[in-house]
Image 1: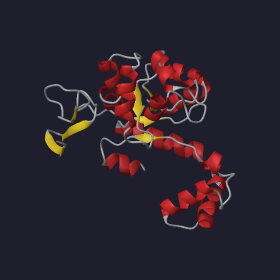
Image 2 (image 1 turned 90 degrees about the horizontal axis):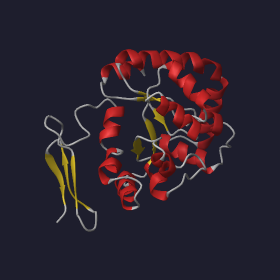
Image 3 (image 1 turned 120 degrees about the horizontal axis):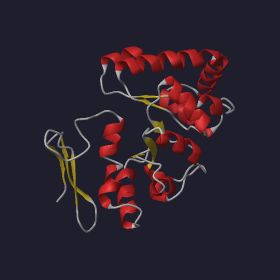
Image 4 (image 1 turned 120 degrees about the vertical axis):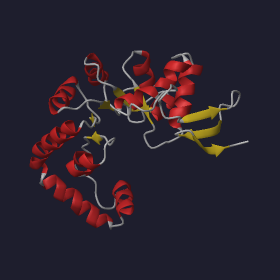
Length: 229
């Protein structure tokens, strides 16, 4: 992982733990079957891999600290994931984490914001108006000033529609809502050449129909890659 970060400037590192939850799943569960299909192996082999990783869990803190130190040396942004408390945030801060991704509670998000750390929440959460798993509501967090970035979180049309919903429902002015999916994500990822329309920046642009809000054209680095009449 440290080799990847050293060779590929612009990458980010996200620290996740899904093993703790997945270790209790059986090979016949739908989630393990989906994981197996993605990897091209059997559910039984997937279950054995999860068990093998769990058996080595004592190695994780040291490995995580080493990886975070290397990422910090490379200048790569480091994201937390699913922090549940201010204590979780403090532990991540000690490791050098610089961005709070999907904090589960208001306390965790508030701790990050108090330290001027960007907070990422899911655009589907903001579009829906609530979390699908009972975690922090993105719309409420945005209203309270506890969210800087909206991520697609697997539903890729969500950022566009979430930004428009936040504007149309009066949660934020359009410019502030759009910053959640443009300027702020670029800043959090340390991609300083994009994220807003300004001289010297990449011309990554969406052209929306003013009535339907549908995407009519897309420009990537100044080159039109989509044109809908």
